[in-house]
Length: 135
Ligand code: ZN
Image (tube, rainbow, N blue to C red; front, side, top):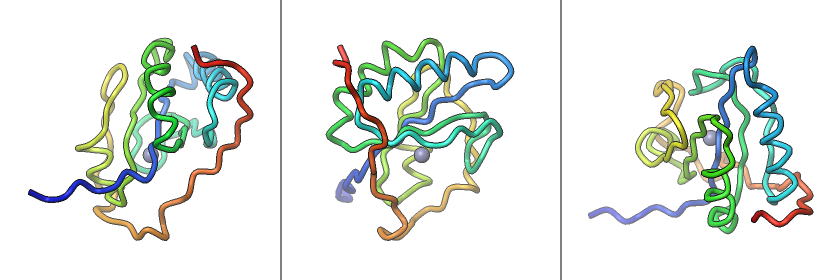
């Protein structure tokens, strides 16, 4: 058996349709930022990288997982969310090790390298200032 790689961080990719439910995604994003110390990524109204739909990324440390992900399970408001670990193996992290809230979306495997160097994994720098209790 191979050893379990370390999970350096996680991403939650929140998918939306710019023509139909961007406002729902905006409301969720605001509520996340009010409650969790996470790194909110840019809006991508057109698909980027391995993603096949509009989305924004929420990057967070393993310490935040246990409070944030259960909250997201209950509060995603119908949006589909990909939650994946970052272990320096992007292809497996997205395609084999991910969990999905809502419907599973297609991803582009060719846009996911099998391995990256530790220096290429961005550290999480929270850019939110939470003031509300998650519960
Ligand atoms: Zn990601």
